[in-house]
Every structure is written in structure tokens, then in C-alpha cells.
Image (cartoon, rainbow, N blue to C red):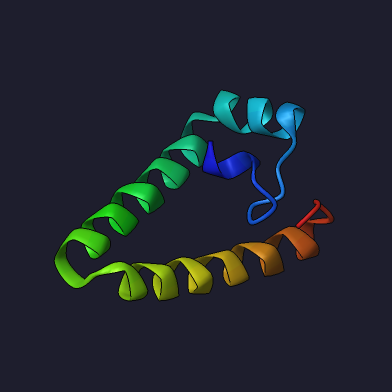
Length: 69
């Protein structure tokens, strides 16, 4: 799963915790759906740029909350 890659930086226990939080899990699913739609309509680079912007924002939020980025 993409969330357990170095890009997201979640280990197995953090991924499990994320899955238990229905609202946060839904946010991640929505992001992947949006990325898929961007890729289909506008190509890989547009989806990749969107992903990089989202991840950068997520990493900043994680740093503020003290979680691992």
C-alpha cells in the first residue's frame, strides 16, 4: 500500500491507527481517488505535482503535531 512507503512514512502500527480513524482514512481515500482522476484526465505529471503538493502540506502538519513525517 502506498501509505506504507517512505513517501508517506507510515509504519504498520501507524497505518493500523490511520485505518481505525474513519475520518482520516476517508481523507486518504479521497486523495487517492482525486489523484487517479487527475491521472486519467490530465496525465501522470499533473497527478504527480498534485501529490507532491499534498505530501508537502501533510509533512508540515505532521511536524507541527510531533508525528513522524
